Image (cartoon, rainbow, N blue to C red; front, side, top):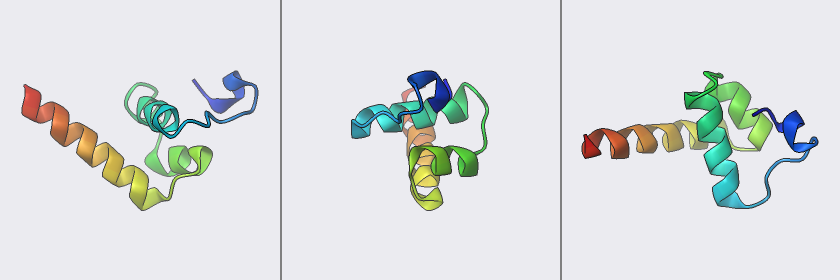
Length: 61
């Protein structure tokens, strides 16, 4: 859900921001650069979050 759907306000809870950013990458198929900029993450931070998420869930399968 783009931030505009939240009334132009980003989620303020850090875990909620992380969830929404990961959802935007994996579910909406948005670029990591766009998502990082929209949710206020450094690009390298979002890349690490995506890597960690993929690695953690790959290990569960």
